[in-house]
Amino acid sequence: MPPTDASTATGRASPTTRSAACARKPPHPGDPDLADLVDELASHSEEFTGRWDAHDVEYHRSGRQRFRHPEAGDPDFDYDALEVPADPGLTLVTCTAAPASPHAAALARLAGGTSDVHGSGG
Image (cartoon, rainbow, N blue to C red; front, side, top):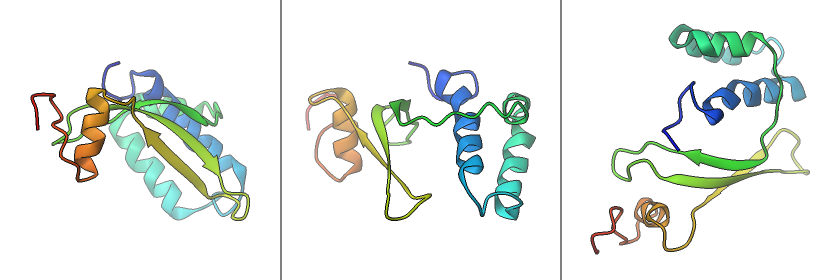
């Protein structure tokens, strides 16, 4: 899976996920911070602008995401988004990696463990 950007499935989904979050409930309509974020993202990507303007609303509750990290490389993590019923609008996202995988080693390293990210011992 290539790194996340506007050309990947996850990159394409990001504007739709943001659209879904904005459509769910106030205070998002007219929120100046959200407008500033969208303007900044749009200034860097014509593809983002097109996808945002399409109002293709989706909410991704689970999937796989590749992250870029200067020390851990490009690990893939499975994620699950869990809405907190007691606090509407609050979502807890958990990320996991397959046990004994290079991605698990990257996660352990980021968490302060001693696993070597590149599998060369450690």
